Amino acid sequence: MRKLLLTIFALLIVPTFLCAEVKEYKLDNGLKVLIIEDHKAPIATFQIWYKVGSRNENLGKTGLSHLLEHMMFKGTPKYGSKAFSKIVQKNGGSDNAFTTKDYTMYFQTLSSDRIDISIELEADRMRNLVMDPKEVIAERNVVMEERRMRYEDDPQNMLYEEVVAGAFKSHPYQWPVIGWMADVSSIEKDDLYNYYRAYYSPDNAFIVVAGDVNPDKIIEKIKESFGSIVPVNDRKSVVAKEENQKGERRISLKRDAELPYFIAVYHTPNFSSEDSYALDLLAMILSGGKSSRFYKSLVYEKKLALSADADYSGFNIDPYLFMIAATAAPGKNIKDIESVLYSEIEMIIKKPPSDMEIQKAKNQIESSFIMGQDSIFYQGMITGQFEIMGSWKLKEKYLEGIRKVTAEDVMKTASKYLIEDNRTVGILIPTKTIGSEK
Image (cartoon, rainbow, N blue to C red; front, top):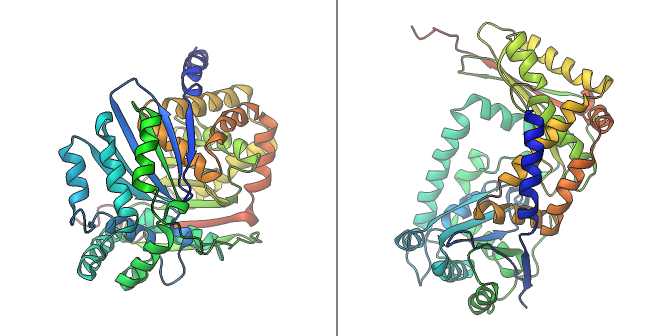
């Protein structure tokens, strides 16, 4: 009954989403603009996407993209330090930003009659950012503290960071978006300013506006504010490619922790490969809820683990990783958990998943993909993610690809990528036992 309800629910929602029209424009300076008109509420979101992330950095200068994101709120000659967010909030809006391996995105959500504020503020800081050396040092310290909290003080996150670094030898995906601590601590004002001038320009960005807007009026305002900004045409492209892995790599990390943790990653293709759809289903079959294979086997039946997960995202510019992970239950051996995880993968390699598992995974992915765009923010977000991958029009292709996957596709894809020679394993070895503090 649940499967039937999910199917019906998806069918009811699909037409509304797929009819959401995206209007595309391009200014003479190379700035692309995508506008999604949606009048269900009197609000709008403005997103500006810069095609620069940690993949554009170099060894010794990792963390530049993320630290620059922090500095973008430090003001311009026209709008002073920290004025950006205050202006947005005084007008009833909210704003934020984030950095990934592939891009950096800034966004504001406002009453639709005030979205011009976003346009003016973002156009101003695209090329007029003030880079005060004292502010650089202060914000650098903020990021270093952020890194201590998210990685140095979190053993599982630190192991994940080590495993990803071990999986990549030549591609910049090997370092974390926040950067290595030694690199972040050495970033100077000139490093950031040169990076800003190289990558923050209209020909290396695109805008997504979604919500209760008139596209004709919005594009005229964007032309007025961004049209005179000169493009930068001589930046370097990322050409690094990762060679095929030829043998398992293993990493052990000893940290102050209470429970052992296991993680393994496998090199896998991105969205441009037909295999990516089967990998999405494979991850869902392995760990999509309490009826998934990992949960039933490791957590519910054998009670070896507190949690067990699989994760795959093909939405990266270059090929990335498929991950499996588990946290040991108190008193359980992490080697037993590793063995069961591999056994579950071997079962799929030898025998395709059932039709019920395939249909359930498809329903979960489709409903999540569609319902996730119920808000205007995520309509813009998904549109931008596909534009980063090559074109926003590819989002129509995604669900078509998911629907075509067969059980045999999942089995063949697992046997192609989830193999020992393509695997990097990490194990967290606790140096603190339960009750040791007593």
